[in-house]
Amino acid sequence: MKYTSFNEFKKANLFGTGIPNFMLAKNMTGKSYLKPLKMAGKALMLANVTFSPGSRCFWHIHRGSHGGGQILICAAGEGWYQEEGKEPISLVPGSVIDIPTDLLHWHGAKKDSWFSHLSIEVPGENCSNE
Image (cartoon, rainbow, N blue to C red; front, side, top):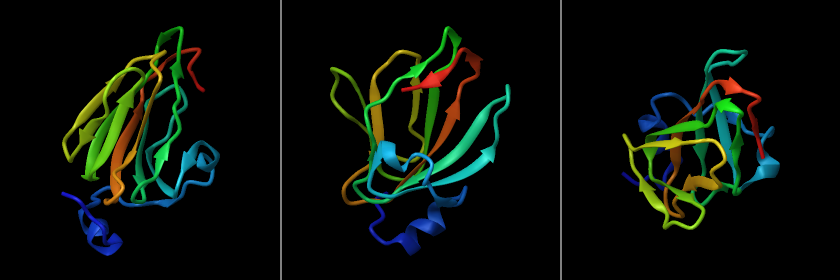
């Protein structure tokens, strides 16, 4: 379901909007928000990432010599996911995207909807993001 009203979206965003995502703002268009749910270390990193309408992350790659990558689970609103050389995929609540290491991609909100997804950073060795 698309949400143009932030107040209506907040009711559907079960994991919470969090705080402005200043840490990754230089790697994104528009405004995004971050609500950490489980912090890393060598364990799993899990966060709810919320995008304002039309905002998205830039093209990026998750690196890792063993394991690594990212899993996205759409939680509320509607968004897009695109891999290099492929058509964008529409994301709605319940959509799951498994992103292996070394795959150039982007994700974010549709132009007319707020969007949130759970971001799971898959544990691995020598992991980084570019």
